[in-house]
Amino acid sequence: MAEERDVFKRIMEKILNYINGELVEPAGKNYLENFNPAEGKPYSLVPDSDTTDVQQAVNSARNAFDSWSTMPAEKRAAILLRIADFIDRDLDKLALAESNDQGKPLRLARSVDIPRASLNMRFFATGAIHFASEAYITGNEAVNYTLRMPVGVAGCISPWNLPLYLFTWKIAPALAAGCTVVAKPSELTPMTAFLFSRLCREAGLPNGVLNIVHGLGNKAGQAIVEHPDVVAISFTGGTATGKKIAATAAPMFKKLSLELGGKNPNMVFADCDFEKAVRTSVQAAFSNQGEICLCGSRIFVERKIFERFTEAFIQQTKELTVGDPLDDKTRIGALISEAHMKKVLGYIDLAKQEGGSILTGGNRVRVSGRCAEGYFIEPTVITGLNERCRTNQEEIFGPVVTLMPFDTEEEVIQYANSTPYGLSATIWTENLTRAHRVAVQIKSGIIWINCWLFRDLRTPFGGMKQSGVGREGGWEALRFFTEAKNVCVKL
Ligand code: NDP
Image 1 (cartoon, protein in one colour):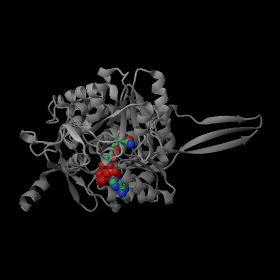
Image 2 (spheres, rainbow, N blue to C red):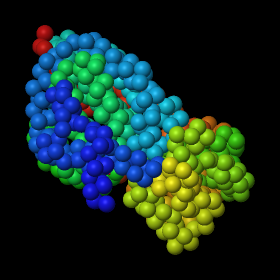
Image 3 (cartoon, rainbow, N blue to C red):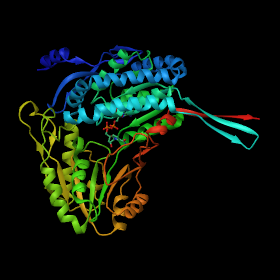
Image 4 (spheres, protein in one colour):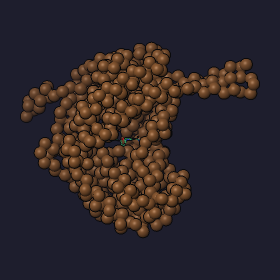
């Protein structure tokens, strides 16, 4: 059996690191198995990189910095736009790779993940051309102008839920601002970052400008965060990992951007557009198997419509097909790993122990055919819990939501603000005055009124409290990857 596994390992496709413009094996020649979560089987090998690989990547990023950071923004933009063109050209191939690697429905990867990756590249490539320095006339005595200089080598570390989407969301502004980058995608979803490195080579990105080191977070990721020459860290992932990264980086005075977990409230008032609220709440609950940091997992419904809403919500939840991600009818694919599936099922057990009733779902799904061993869970709706219990306080990050009634505006605001998180919130009401009043009082970085996940890439994106530090998006991102230098000229 062990021998068979060895043979299998030798013939599996090897993902390679991207260092100094070359696709290279990890220095230690060690690899980890990369799973297709819908099949529950390994299908490729990912480098288990260590400090040697990170050191090589940092060296090459440092060497590339002077020429990349002084290249005219238009020229940098042209290269990044070429990469975006290649993403568009390879849409089908990248979407299939993302679905196989992550477990998400192919139609979602095709319509959301990959188009957004291309848009991220275009948005920041062109943004860099318009990024201007400010000037101030100080009385009639002086002119102050503020230069924004690329910070140097940036470390970009991204999670597994929206792999290429979040990877490009970080590296695009870093590169556009003139930084060189050492990046690490999650070792659970390395494939599209690997394909992306090939596109960078094809597009003529100069050697060393972007380096991708694959491997484990506590090994390769930690080595990036600890390296003294990596002066800024942009991280998206769990709150516990964020704490560890902050503890390492803060004494070295690195710039830090942390996009962390969420436990987002979805508040439905009786005066909402009912059909729209139900439909979008189902989407906000279960898109990408509930593995989006912005999913609305705590649904508070005004008591007057609680019963009606619950009925409609459950009916629409039951209509969501769980199955093979490559099947066009599938709305809920596989969870990222066996360990994560067990964690989510553990939370469903916890909800029962805490006195919750499962209104629909609650179980692992065995899909027939090639997906028989895949990590599927039914979309699950729980009721009968208060806002303080662990099920309603901790991030589950799976297809599990709770429904809770409320009576007054004050009460729902208190419920919404009751977790340590503060990433996003949704408010459903046709009363605009109320909508604004509630929005002001919710402690979240992102508020949606009568919609969900409606994004304008120019807006600041990020969380309050334990959901993060700093903001991504628009000028905020370009500012993060640059250092402000004020020059005062006495007239
Ligand atoms: P993790 O925190 O486990 O990992 C995120 C990335 O960090 C991975 O590449 C991981 O590598 C790496 N990493 C882990 N430990 C370290 C370390 N000590 N030093 C440096 N890097 C490290 O998050 P997940 O991948 O599990 O992603 C899910 C989480 O991400 C959820 O909490 C979700 O809410 C959050 N998220 C937040 C978003 C936001 O914008 N606020 C958006 C999307 C997700 P490895 O995979 O090898 O562990």
